[in-house]
Length: 133
Image (cartoon, rainbow, N blue to C red; front, side, top):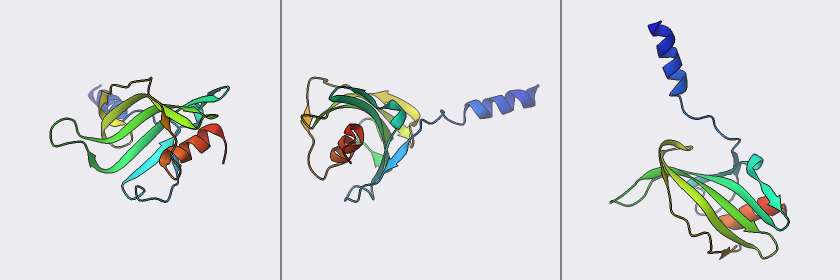
């Protein structure tokens, strides 16, 4: 009985079931610092608006000397394909890589849109979301 309980605990504590994360290849100065993934199964389109989830897995711990430190984040973004802009809908920071560990939800102002800048990671994500590759 103890052995069955131990096996069950090991399976349950081995981490969450991963989403279908697909790495986004981008040659820029950040590629040595982080890997960015998207989950294609989360891409939802409503006319010119597309929402999707992104995972950023950092090579080194992020955060300040005071406060939370994290190694990965998940963000839910919405892209306006026609206006080529993006806004953050939600994000969570994780203490370990690949959305494992202690999770901290962040505050998001959903009313603020950013223009998708050329040569940025949001440009690559916009291309994926809006299928303009």
